[in-house]
Length: 292
Figure 1 (cartoon, helix red, strand yellow):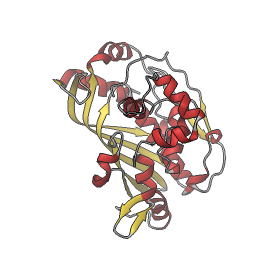
Figure 2 (cartoon, one colour):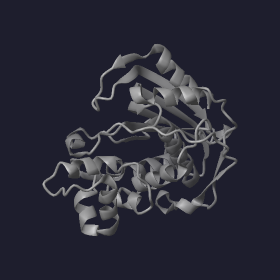
Figure 3 (tube, one colour):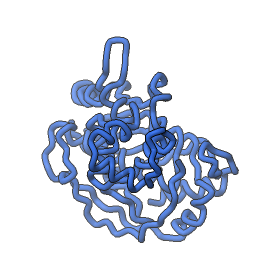
Figure 4 (cartoon, helix red, strand yellow):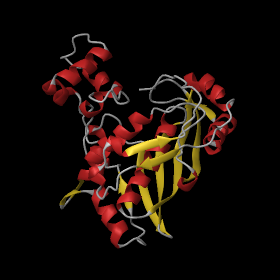
């Protein structure tokens, strides 16, 4: 995906050194947009292997409205483990467990998972249970119904940024608002992301929202259109620079195809087995440490 490599190069060329919450340090720029034609292939990086299993399971977890990492841990998806472990390690209940030992407790002990595995009212909660004066709003279901019945609406929007809940979240939402657009029987999605970890996070976000667009298009009897990704603080962490340079040295390969194998009618009925990635031929994965 040349769009993504251009994004990395832009940060290196135009970015400036900036401190950050994690005390890692970044090269940062503000305001960048990429566009991906979903008819041209599934936008999964080929210049390094992306862990698609985690993309799919995390997205299904969001859609379910769940906010406890046990669903992910039970499926050997580790992308959210650091944040609840960090909270647990600061508590009086902490007994010196390593993160791996903490994760095993989450997997084997339902009561422990209930107490220590929840991330607060993060993405899935806001998508399906957004608080209002009149009760709870299922934003995802409402938007899908609007796409079906009023596709020209300019209000096909889902927000994960509930200001009153930010302090209760393990991590405030980075990808915080997305809007759908219907034209010529195609469904497009525009995402605004306040903060983007260019090397580790952004490739994951691109694939996730591209897949969500395909899923909603499927249940609304539409074709996928474009995914438009706008990022506020776009940054490369200082300990990812060597990995970024390696990735920039690689020539992108042809994009794979994502097949939804079953005729799914409801967004709540998707299963992991419904998705098949074809013709994915990436370069090897490039490891990097996540900043917490």
